[in-house]
Structure formats: C-alpha cells, structure tokens
Image (cartoon, rainbow, N blue to C red; front, side, top):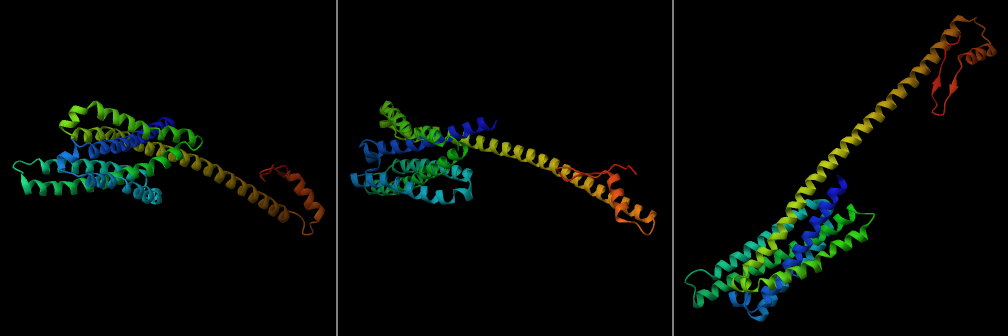
Length: 288
C-alpha cells in the first residue's frame, strides 16, 4: 500500500509541475500576442513585460521562503497554498476581463477601467508566481524523501514535467488559436484543469499517507507492548528466583546447628544446582 501511495503522491507532484509550466507558457502567449491582453487592456510593450516579469520574481522568493519553512508548516499546507494562488490568479484575470468589458465604457471611462484591470492582472501575476514557486519548494523534498534510494531517477522523471508542460501547453494554445483569439479566458481554464487534478490526487494521497502512518504506528505500539510484557514477565521471574534462593538460604541457616561451617554451606549451595544462563537467568531445582 505504501508503494502505491508513494506513486500517487509522485504523479500528483508531476501534474503540479505541469500546472506551473502551463501557467508560464499561457501567460507568455497572452502578454506577447497583440490580439490578446495588449488588445483587451490597451497594453503597450513596457506594460506587457511588466506583467510578464511580475510572474517571475515572486517565483524565486517563494522557493527560498518555503524551502526554509516547509518542514515546519508541512507539505499539505504548501500544496493548498499553491492551489489557492492558482484560484486567485484565475479570479483576478476574470475580474480584469469583466472590468474592461462592462457596457457603455468609452473614452476616459474605458482608460480608467483598463488601468484598474491592469492592477488586477499585475497582482494576479504576482500571486501566480508565488504559487509556482511554492510548487517547486515542496515537490522536490517530497519526492526525494519518498524515493531516497533512487532520488536521481525519480527527480529526473519529475522535472521532465516542466519542459513537457511547456510543450504541451504551447501546442494546446496554438491548436486553440481561433478560440483563444475570440476569448483568451480559455487559457485560464487550461491552467485550471491540471491544477484541479493535482489538488485532488495530492489530497487523496496525503490522506492515505495519514492512514498508512497510523496503521504503522498502531503496529509499532502493539509490538512494543508485546516486548514490554515479555520483559516484565522475565524480570518478575528473575526476581522470584532470587527471592526463592534467599528464602532457601535463610531456611537452611535457621535449621542447621549454630556453628555452620563454610564447607557445609557451600555443599548446600551445590545441591541447589544453580545454573547461570547467558541471559543471567537463575534456575533453581529443589534438590534438598
């Protein structure tokens, strides 16, 4: 069960990396294609590149930040945070679209709406970059921990998701050329598909990990209780044997003449047949 669960977690991480690649390549199309964001929001070249860069530098910040605290907050929190970032990015992008496509916008009103929409896109890009960096911060230690004996193999397979996601996302965008030109929000939906897949698979796998951990813990506890009971029984038996030896010695001394000699007592001990086992267990056979 553990091996199957590890594979499920791995493929969840793989899909999460594909999601970051989809987000990167689709934003590159939307920012640089004159018929998409530049047309919808009246962006010039500088504004377009500002939006593109807003999704890159937070990537580095979140990788560093979450790498420092990932062991304290846990992988589940990091995974949920990255998904929330994707969701907020999508909401802000849709909000920006609705702002400039409201009825009756012309002239200065349209320019003001475009400025407001630009802010939605800018902060949405920053949030998306934070989410992408968080994915990188947690998928690497997760995979390295699960497959510690074959880290190189599985990390190489994992990181194939980045170029694979770029190629796949780019091809999908090109094939949907007419629909994308008509409504670029289709590209936001494309990001949502792998994001939902990795969320569902990761949550299920993490829940299953908790079940496996509890099962292993219960098994360890039962084994420990068995060892403890056995040790207690051995200790009790050893104490009983020592007490019996003391009682036998006391009885001998009381029933013998007042002038018991050393040789006589030694002969008595020999007849008790005391045997020292490797575990220092004393066996007494009443052979008096």
